[in-house]
Figure 1 (cartoon, rainbow, N blue to C red):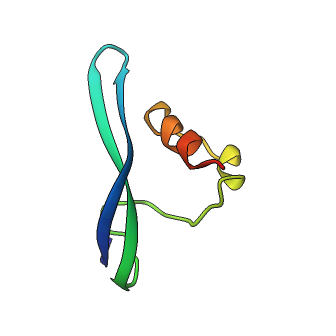
Figure 2: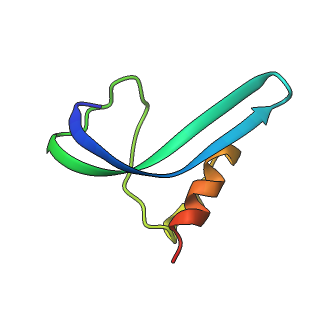
Length: 72
């Protein structure tokens, strides 16, 4: 994405099987932004969202546990 970050602590991990065909394992980190500007490299688009705004988006099942962990 064209930016430099420093991965800090692990928030959580997620293991999800889609249609008994694809097994996804995701690891979510708290990261510190270091430098650079976001570029759309191999992604269609991006946006910055608050936790409240995420309810308006189609979030993948594998990501839902991360959102729950971030809520106060």
